[in-house]
Image (cartoon, rainbow, N blue to C red):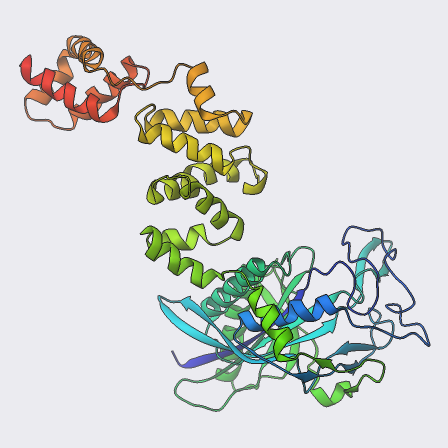
Length: 478
C-alpha cells in the first residue's frame, strides 16, 4: 500500500457505580429527565464534590486487567470548556497524573497476534445528554448523565487499520464485561469510542496530521468510518491538498465523515488541579486487595478451555465471548458431559434458538442442569441426537425436565436389534427401485434407505444400529 494508517483509540466507559462519581445521585439510565440531579452535579456555587471510592476501585480493576501501572498518587483536574451539556463550564477529569498508565492489551487481527499499548486510563465525570429531537425545532439537556462515573482509556498510536481497531474494541469490551464494571451498552452511551486517524507514506516513521472521528454508534460503524477516513485522506494528499486537524462526525446513512470543528489542543482546555478534591492515594495494600478480586480474564479462560477441555481455538473463542456463556458451559461440563458435545449443543443448537427468539442465555428455560441432563440421555443411548433436538425445543418452550419430555412423548430410542431389523425388511420390500440401485453400486442410495428406516421408526432407531442392521439385511436378502 502507498500509505500506512496510524490509529489511536479513545474509549469512554461509564462505570456501573450505583451513584455518581462526586455526589450521591442515582445513575439509573431510565429515570425521568433531570430527576437524578443535585446541587453538586448541577454545578451550583459553593458545593463540594466528594469522590466515589467504588469508582476508584473499578478504575484500578480495569487498569490492572490492562497491565497498567497504578499511580500511588494521582489528582483530579478541571478541564475548562463551554458547552450546554456542562453546567459548571468545566469537567472534572485527570490530566498529567492519571490513575492508570503504561499498559497493554493483546489482540488478534489479520490472522496474527499484536500488542496494543495503553497510554492511560483516567477517571472523570460524564457530561449531560443533549437532545435535539424534542420537536418543533427545540433542543433539551438531560442532566441525569452529568456526573456519572467515566473512565477514559487511551491507546498508543499502535493500530494499523480498521480490522485491528475492531479487534481492539471487541477485546476491550469483552474484558470490561468480564470485570463487571460496565454493561458497555453503546445504544445507551455507556461505551463510546473515538478514533484518531492519520496516514503516512509506507516505510516512514513521522506521523501525519490526524483527524478524530466521533459520534459512531457501533463497532462496525467505527470500522467503516476508519476505512472511509483513510481513503479520504489519501485522496486529499494525492490531489495536492493537506489534511486538517479537526473533529469529524460519522454519517452512517451516507457512509461518510464530515467536518464538525477544529480539534482542540490540551492548552485550549486550561487544565489546572481541582482545588475541591484531595489527591487519590492507592497504596500497595489497596492495590493488592483489588488485584485479588479480579476474575479469570477472557484470554486466560480461552487458553484454559483449549488446554483443559481440548477445544479448538474457534470453539473456545465462541464459548468465552460472554462471561455468562462461559459460566454456563462450565456448569454443564462439570456434571460429567463430554466437553466437545457440550460445546456443540450450546454454541450451535441452543444459540440458534436464543437468536431466533431474541432471548438472552440467562433468561432461557434451558438451564445448565437441564442441558446436561439431556446430554446424558444422548450419551447413555436413551435418545438419539435427532430426537434430542425435539427435546431441546420442548425444553426451551416449556421449561420441563428432559426426562419428563422423553417419557411424555415416548421418545425413547429403539436399540432393539430385532425391532430395527423388522423395520429394515419392511423398508427393503417397499423400495425395490432404490434397493436395486444400491446393489448396482450406487452407494448414495443407501442414505435414502436409512432415511426411510428412520422414518419408519419415527426417528427413534439408534442411528448407528440402523446403519449396521440395514447393511446386514441388504446383504442377506441380495
